[in-house]
Length: 346
Image 1 (tube, one colour):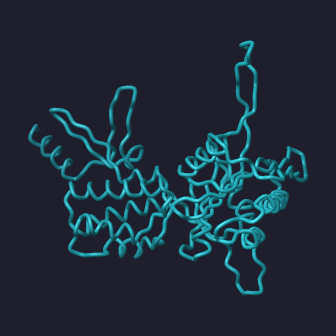
Image 2 (cartoon, helix red, strand yellow):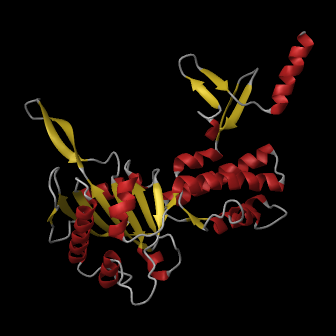
Image 3 (spheres, helix red, strand yellow):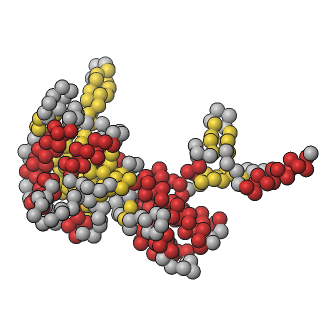
């Protein structure tokens, strides 16, 4: 990650205040060790669960005005650099304040604007940071209460692939990382950014898992080869996610055909974009849902167990107290064997 610009503005609004107050920073923050550390930690949080994706509001006619934030990007970003990044972010912070005031929300925070380059593409992250109380030990070994940035979670955050937006290479160049209160994001924060369309990462990732299983079934792959396909897709998606490279269906289809050499080419792409999935070519990934491609397994001299990880707490339940597993759904073949055993005993 090559950081180009960083700045933080405070949007102060306390309980009972009707309007928020902007406390702007007039010069960019220094790109130093602290800035790099915070940027890295925020980037790691962004890769966790809860991503929504979308694009800027499409105008119905050429005469319609651009959303305010989009207009600011158009005026200040030329495709390679921001002119007067402090002025751009200050104007954007004022627009955030307007949307915050309209929403009636009682909380402000610190608006972090970060322009960086990754894999030769330009990105802009806009993150709402808040503080939380913590404890510290002073020089005289007493406990003091301090305030520090809450990095346990992101309250509101958007990452815009500026290169994809300008080149028109993707319709989903905005990624949102949402906190517990999703309504806040889908209301004033999304209006502030000017985003019109959302796709929940969890839903798309769950469908991707189903596509992989159907792909294996339609090719007639055996259990070993099917598990190899699932593991390959799982690891490939994680690699792309770590590199902030979009996960695309057509690229996965080409890689699968090249590695597993099925008789029918492009079947993965056809399944993913056909009924009932209708996945977009570029999809967001949620790590927890992606684990549906992995399995829990174990064996000893007398027993071997293996099941898809997404069955845990659905039809397979683990009791840590007595180290036992409860299966509420069993394979038909196993049921028949148990029934035959009972019949023999009678």
